[in-house]
Length: 304
Image (cartoon, rainbow, N blue to C red):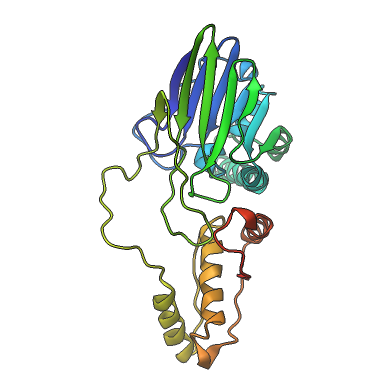
């Protein structure tokens, strides 16, 4: 058996790890690199067509964004994810494909104006994304499943995003069995909408996310509901509108939760009926998925 680090070993994005056990080739995540990075991801040691499975820790694009490219290059295996991650990948990979196509069109128009005849090809298309999405198989938290001969796995809620998981993988080759745990991105405690990260009790090897591993977060984390209410009150009093830029998946739903708290607790009696608009189709779709997965949340109270 063999473990190789393809991406995110020296940097934050582009997470991808390769496992070879027996005759099977497995990836854990297949993420897109985002922003300027010092290190390059290394090529896969086998062709995409020889990858049998991809195990996905969560739906963020830096962990899933190259899955449609993997399909484009010949992958026809199975993508394994939690149920909520499968739902979020459906909308997020389609959105990513749309962005790739729009960027290719913009670049080609720019190059045409400059006199270049070398076309820029999108990393992948909507067709690639849709075909990949059909390969995603959803699994529940907490159960041990057999992926194939010599490979078992279990998803554990890690509290980073709806559906996010650490993955315990038992690998057997001949008489040797080893357990590798991939932490995925680790969430904080006491977050709205998400459960606290669950513990894993044993492993032979751990591959752990360490984005903030060199920081000490002191003091109790407090939700900014009171501060947000003050900002709203001040702005409404002056006749203004509050515009809140927010990531479509995860952060938007938390902001909606805070706004609902402000309304339910009558924290702005002068403006208790203020309207809230979500101006993003992706955010709306993501919010519907959050509502469909309330069993994975810390609260089942109405929050919209």
